[in-house]
Length: 112
Image (cartoon, rainbow, N blue to C red; front, side):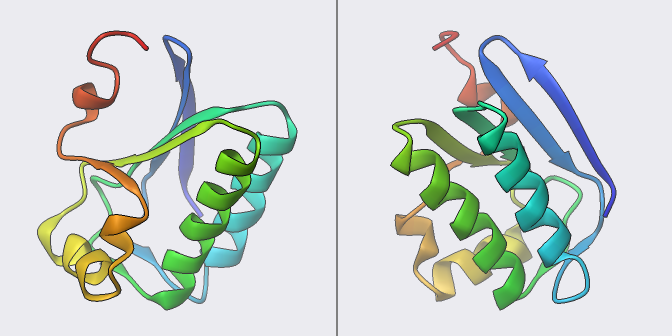
């Protein structure tokens, strides 16, 4: 899986550069997120601007990361979700579970 991690303000931003998150690479994403969290990251933003398709295993990997961060009283947000991917979150009602922002900069807005 093609990922890029960077620090912006107090956030660890994980950009997924692949166009698909599915059964073939979701396990790698789940492990990567867990390593970030176990490494002490408590404020994670996942940038999904490149992702054009996500299946249930991809949603599960993100859900796992979200659950782990929230269990540590952290913050987990998703940004720049393309319309066809957002429809999967809406169909599964996970748009009610995740902190979703339209624009990447929205997540940082006031630097908190």
